[in-house]
Image 1 (cartoon, rainbow, N blue to C red):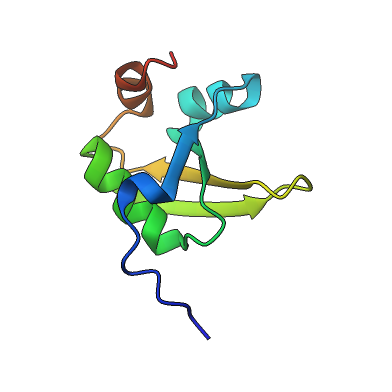
Image 2 (cartoon, rainbow, N blue to C red; image 1 turned 90 degrees about the vertical axis):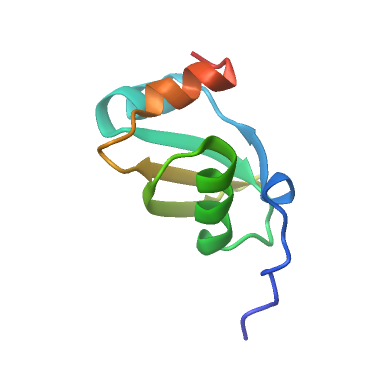
Length: 93
């Protein structure tokens, strides 16, 4: 019952990055970035969008939907890439 999300554009998938105290700790220690994403986006959509928009290689994507109905994606980057470098490009660090 997979919906057809292959047509999702990268800018439709990723809404904005999240930079909280916990997210900054994850960025430094686990090489992870946190994004608020479209509720209809799959892990595969998020991976493709991050790789295309930020020119990095993604190792793993974990998603959860908060009690407020917001979908967050935790994106672990390949060890060859630094999440801090991407965060600096985004202007959140």
